[in-house]
Length: 101
Image 1 (cartoon, rainbow, N blue to C red):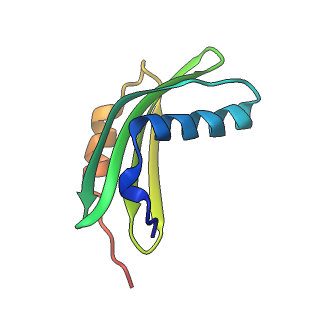
Image 2: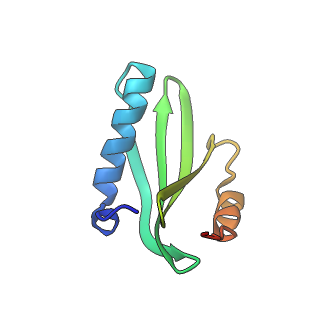
């Protein structure tokens, strides 16, 4: 489990994602956070973050759900704005559940 989980902000998570993407693609990739909320998944602390960013000419939207349990689990859904799968992604995210041993 992550003891600092509840202290993360939208800006902190956007910065971390931007650094990771920039390192991966070798160019600066700014990340815009469209939505960031703390919530729960199966009574476990979680956050849900919706972002947008561009890799070259490719525009992307992303939904991230992170759950703090025995470890920190992250689920990510990504699409282009033309596809606009966000409603389907949200439905999928709402169906997450955990069984911890």
